[in-house]
Length: 191
Image 1 (tube, rainbow, N blue to C red):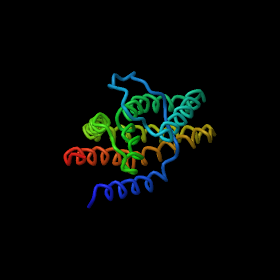
Image 2 (image 1 turned 90 degrees about the horizontal axis):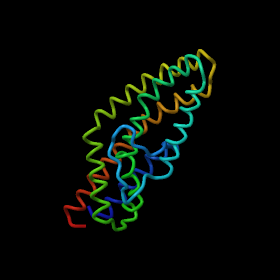
Image 3 (image 1 turned 135 degrees about the vertical axis):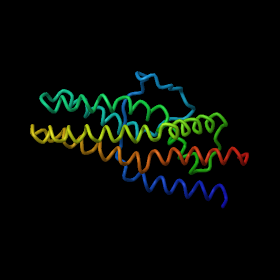
Image 4 (image 1 turned 60 degrees about the vertical axis):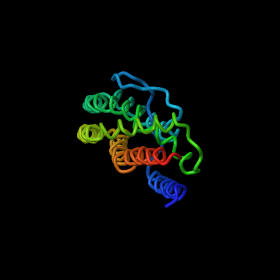
């Protein structure tokens, strides 16, 4: 199969899969000591906006008082370092999808950085999935507290974040790993 056909099929898969992913993000930071460099490409804005929206909703839950606030603190403790890791290496390679889909040239630096980030995700994949399990458990407790205290906005946030984690496991992480594999193949073939 020609490289352009692979890129088209890959882009179609990602575009189709990403239709189910709502828009998201949270601020760039390095509180957990994760190495964040300035790549020569950027995370797609829709993903960044989704994380910002989720972070804002978490802030509201943290200010809600009662058992809901206490449960939101447990979510925040698990979620914020996880977001940092995602923003450092799981999301930025997605910024190359349009280049890959359009068969536009990529610099060696762009390919090297994306391959390195995908490798970092691969190395931490099981940890990221385990963190999702911890976050899901904390979110169930948050949803329960929000139901008991009649806080429908916080309940909606908890449910949306559970779906968000599922989308990452089913779409975002595999796509980043595929980008890394695809770019490695491109490099090996000298393209």
